[in-house]
Length: 238
Image 1: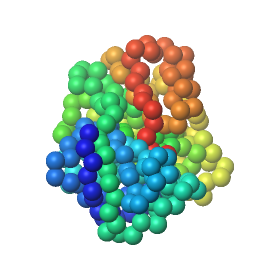
Image 2: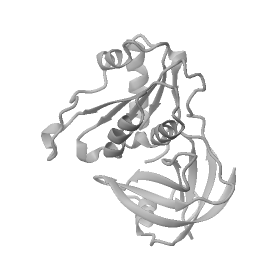
Image 3: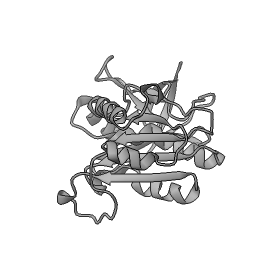
Image 4: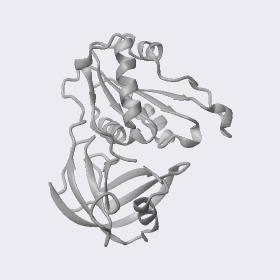
């Protein structure tokens, strides 16, 4: 890994309480879809308050770098949100091994909860650009459409990539102000079995808070999935 100094180019909301930050991409910064980097704030202390790991949302072919995060009330998030455009910060990376397998004969089933979508955005953008032969299925759980980061882009990616299927579900529509015609239950074993019907030997990728990752591993076992076919990694992106 190496450390680079970059400028903040833009920031924008991508869901209620979730912000995306666009950074310039330094020369020589190469990464694989699904990897992460460390964000080090200017003048910040070492450790948790001064740096944080985030999955890279942008795909390797894109000219800039982007990450997204829930804007929780922490010292780091307050400092991050207060950065003006043009501010300099450091990135350290890339790192991480939650990357798509190479054999296109095996489908990829991506399972994300909330902001755990970030590494999969990079994968899906890359697959659309490269016209990948992988069959891709995304199971994406959120409370409400308002909370669902990158929902409109994911729906657009379905139209760009005929091999990509989106199965989004909302678990708290009683508190939503937006319409939703899709699924409204949790991702349980029946949901998984329906999603993978007809897929040949899929490999599963799980991303989200630690409790969700553990719960989904158990759900996949209940659905008859071999644990050796499940990949997950400590989640980057709170």
